[in-house]
Image (cartoon, rainbow, N blue to C red; front, side):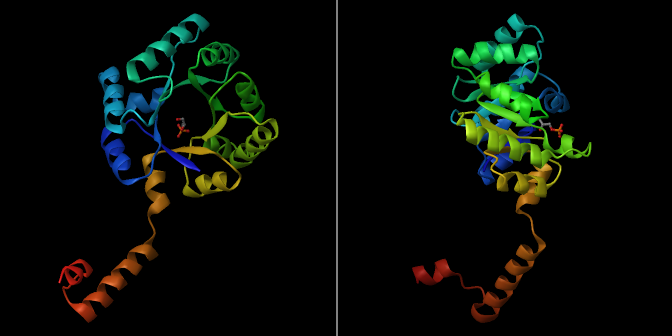
Length: 229
Ligand code: G3P
């Protein structure tokens, strides 16, 4: 499963872009509101950090068809091109209309705030590049977030659509893994959960044990030093 970073924090983006195999960055209005300030410069800075090849997803705020289309095109022109900049549009009737129009022109649309497999099916039929089901928001209302992702994966497999699942809204590392197991293509993950995907106390104690045993046998010598003589 491909991994994208779900934050607009520049320090976090620099860190994860350097150390983790992320394919890009997703934002939404709430995520951007946490950073504040000149959000246009901020988005351009995100593009500069991740480079031209990685994906940047930015959500429209307009709610009328013509304005959504205009805003979507402006976002892509500002931040890259149709291949690397994806426009997030919520799963509503006007969102589907905008998705159909923009995808016909070659824009990559991420239909977001998806809570059901039915919404995902419609988004796929409307030409979306991605659908973003909100896993934790479903789990938090006693619904089956991972099961919804599984249903979408099966539907997309049956239809053969090119539309990809971009699962979002994760609160636990287990939810991420569970989505991967049911065939989710891509997950966008916030900084906290991303850290938890790699951290393990037994990894740390194992490393400490290796260092202790090495030093007990070879002192301060290193493999590189031994190779170089
Ligand atoms: O980016 C959309 C999604 O990840 C929202 O997450 O944590 O606000 O439910 P959250």
